[in-house]
Amino acid sequence: MATGTRPPRPPSGVHGASRAAIRAGHLRTDRWWLAPAGTAAGLLAFVAYSTWRAFANADYYAAPYVSPFYSPCLAQNCEEMRGGPNLDLVGSWWGLSPALLILVFPLGFRLTCYYYRKAYYRSFWASPPACAVAEPHSRYTGETRFPLVLQNLHRYFFYAAVPVAAVLTYDTVLTFRDADYAWGHMGAGTLLFLLNAVLIWAYTLSCHSCRHIMGGRLRHFSKHPVRYRLWGWAGRLNARHMQLAWASLVSVAACDLYVYLLATGAFTDPRIF
Image (cartoon, rainbow, N blue to C red; front, side, top):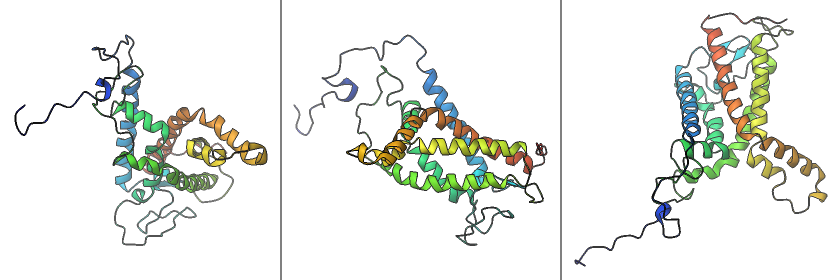
């Protein structure tokens, strides 16, 4: 061996000695790529839409509806929202879209969510792209390095997601007013906001961290009957975590789009009573 040269590294990862020596990347004959491709398309569509709306900084309030992307409004440069959640906590120095102050919390909650980890690991990073399909990476380091180590912040994002869901519930209550802010109104948007609030709460409470907080560290369920029951409810929701993740993602985008169309005059809110 020549001086200064290093011996070749032994195969690792999917090509390691402990793995089956199969030359084919996989033996599946079904259209296994449809699921990761569909997931990638859905997530990219939402990212593109939410990015456009977040930086638009316009058309996010049409009385009595306020876009969930902009609520609560924490900056002084918000549109006038009479009776709405305009907190103005950061003052006038913030010159960008106020949505950027809010979306970091629900976005961080979703990005670190256990289901979404599986979704973008398979669809974007191919780690692995599907069951029984080997990943193309030579090594796997898990979530021990930056930026994946930030996934460990999921529980803290859960604590931030709960008040965000509470604010969206408050916004839903305000939709029972008409354009003149008189109570006793229900429009088509009210039903949409009600559905979104329910889905947001269901997705938030079905979170794995929520289930763990309820009863994950209890040694004796019999000594904590209330927490045991809460743990059981969270577990039943957790079984539908994937469906709730997608349903709430669609509903929150639909609410924002509905407000945008109202604010731009595309149509008027159909009144139910």
